[in-house]
Structure formats: C-alpha cells, structure tokens
Length: 374
Image (cartoon, rainbow, N blue to C red; front, side):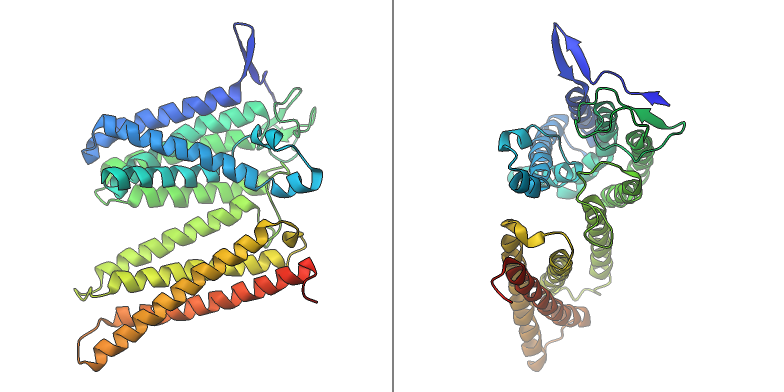
C-alpha cells in the first residue's frame, strides 16, 4: 500500500503543486527528446523546438478547453463560478488534439512535412505523459476505484478535493505511467528500425487508445463523463474514434497504393467518403446522446452539435453527389475512370445521406426534450 506524499513542493516558503511541476517537466522532456530524434528525419533541432512550442501551446489550450467543455453541465446546474472551473486540471485527450492542431499550424505556416513532425513528436508524447500521470498520482486526480491491495494508495490531503480521503484506491495512474513507458520504448525501436513514415504516429494512437480504453474500467473518479453510450466514458469513446480514424487512414493508404495509376479524382473522392463516414459516425453518436438518460438537451451546446453535423454531412453529400455525377459524365464521354473512384464517389454520397438522417433524428429529439415538439 502506498501513502500519497504531500501534493505541494515548498520553495522559499511558497507551496507549488507537484502536478504543475511534473506537467512542465513532461513538456520539456518530450520537446527535447523530439528535437534529438529529428536528426533522423533531417529536421533542424531549432525547428523541432519551435514546432514543440506550437504543439505545447495548442496542447495547453486543448486540454483546458476540453476540461471546461466536460464541466458545462456542472457549471449550469450548480452555478459554479467560471474562474473556479478555469483553475481545474487538464484533460489529456484535449491536449493531444490541441497539440496536433498546433503542430499542423506550424507545418502549414513554415511548409514543413506533416508526417515527419508528427512521427518525431508522437514517439515523445508517451514519455512526457509518464511525468504527467505521476503528477496525477500525487495530486489525487484521475484516481482508481476502491481497492485494498498491494497496488493501492491512500490520500490524506489530496490536491483534488473530490478524491476520497482515507480510502484505499487503486493506483491506476501508476499503472498507466508504466504502460506509457513501455509504449515509449516500443515506439523508439519502431522509429529507428523502420523507414515507413507515419507508422510511429499510427502505432502511438492505437497503442495509447488501447491502454486508455482498458484502464478506464478501473477508474473511480466521477468527472469522466461516463456511461452515456454503451457504458463507455468520454475517453473510451474518443479512443474508439481515434482507432477508427487510424483504420480509415490505413485503408486510405492501401487504396491509394492499389489505384493502378488511375489517380484522376481519387483523392477528392476518397476525401468525400472519409469525411462522410466521419459525419455519419458523429451523427449516430449524437442520436445516442439524445436518446440516453443523461439530460443531453439541457445544455445550450446541443443545438450547436446538430448544426455542425448538418453542415458536415450536408456539405459532404453535395460534394459526393457532384463528384459522382462528374464521374458518370466522364464515362458517358468514353473516358476511362478507375472503379475505385466511382465506388468511393457513390459510397461517400450514400454515407453522407445516412448521416443527414441521423442528424435530423437527433435534431427532432433535442426539440422534443426542449418541449418545442411533442
């Protein structure tokens, strides 16, 4: 059994939370490791550091925004001051998405290779995350379920006020830290042993999603947004979506390679299909949200979801329809069109149409929940 240490480090008479210190250490270590690794992809160390800064800033904003977003219902119901919500912790998946966006912005502005930068940072993320999870262990956040065994921890003065005091809890943060360290070692080996660009990034996303999905079953903290879709928490849902995205990406790369040189309109058609599939999945999730026991339609952001899904699926339907009509016109003119292009144009149109039906269903259900329709 582990007894949690003091969550504060006293420096010159001031108490500084270990959580923030280890969070910063994780960012620095991950950034430095990425700059060293960049040599293999011929990336200047200074450029790698600048890219790390963009990713770090995006990660901070993303982690905080997802944390706030997950607390919207609590803010509205309990009328919690927004300043207090800002002072809460971070959500890792929000940081991952925000960091990705920040890195993409850097590569776009400075015309750098997306794949190279994603690979060198993807390998470093689990290393930096190890320190972050140790910080969670000390602070008491992201704790495990009640468990009185050799891998349990007891908190007497947790930084997170929602953490049970004096109750043995499973040290799930320690388990995740160890799992992340193993994942980091595997990714380092893959990075230096393979020449396939993008593989380390795909393996990281699949590996961490599997780790997070599994460990969520052993979490005991309430702020997880759990149980609304097939009993899955928010992080488990995101894990499933990320793995699905990686599968779609791998299919894309395979089809692109097997296009037999007939690449006319291939990328455009495949983009329509993939985005239509994303809209379809998100719209289906929206329906599951609005039919669950959670008061989904109580929050003002729900109609925003519906509008976004209508926009995404609608645009992809129009794009898929236009592409399919263009393909049919080319065939009538006697021009050769790859079968894969024709099939993807048609499937993109159909999938987007189904997504629009889900979005319509969700919109009606939200209106019913709001009392507008009966």
